[in-house]
Image 1: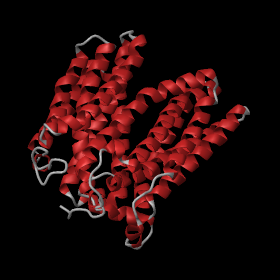
Image 2: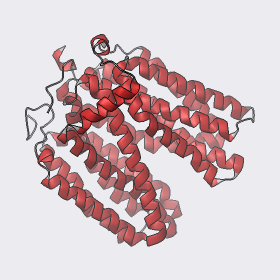
Image 3: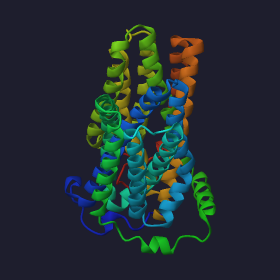
Image 4: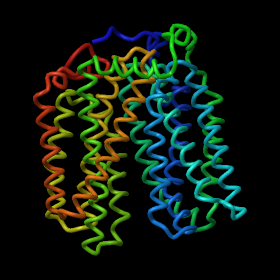
Length: 423
């Protein structure tokens, strides 16, 4: 285990409530604007391409371009966030996203938006998201005192669920009004995020930048991977998070597919809304729950709770009940996620935090892609019951691994000196 990290926010000043932490609120607000716009355009991209070409395959290429470019850029983005000013990385990424979306909006308005341009803008958006996310996560421990870091992570989780609930619906409404609106709105949202970031007084980073190890971007990326692989607790927590994310990503697609097969097409939208609502409520409850649950208990509650809830998908009526099951599972996730993410941040030196964020982003993106693909294939070729049982088997395996893992058992309480409850 590494030594305690230097340069944390709590060494500079007494802790203030998060609502009065100007730097954190600016960071949070800029990310809300960025994520909300991204979720809206992610929904609008396939609508645009299908309207232009009539091809579902070509529409899927655009979503693949966003996801693949974000994954490929994830590790280098983390290395960039460790070598230069993180605020500058975020500003540049939002400026690039705003410019690309503005070009696309103008092309759509002019009736000259070929698929090649749409794919190029999707790639820019994916790379920009990877850069912004790595810098944002690496900057968080420097603007939030360690005792409040877990609460900040939980609020960030709520931010994500709010964006996933409202973003696609907003994108659909804007697209129905005028085809160009979702992309123009995302360009404006990115400019808004950039404007918010201009007021952020980021912590001094010159010492970290000056002390960065020599070598190019590839060397920095490989150094970060070697460091991550050399720390057992980080390996275990990243692996556990990957496994759970893969199953949960696939289950949303499976639940929607099962509802459509059962003829409950009118209830497909509420499935995602109920899941997102459960995640938001769980994020709001996480600061309270983490004070009352040992970290080991919180992780077991998530893994074994999901293992008990998911089999209900095979027996409950299609539609709203599926959303309730996924919503209850999503409610359990933020507390364990906040505890694990907080420990990952506080045990990682500041000079490595960007690469940690990049590695986690890549691993979760890959897990989501694999989980969605596996869930769709199982549902198509093996049927609903076999798909749900396969997902349950993976969750039970993850729960057993978490139960038997000495690393998970040794997770310290956020802000505390060792395992056990928070003070």
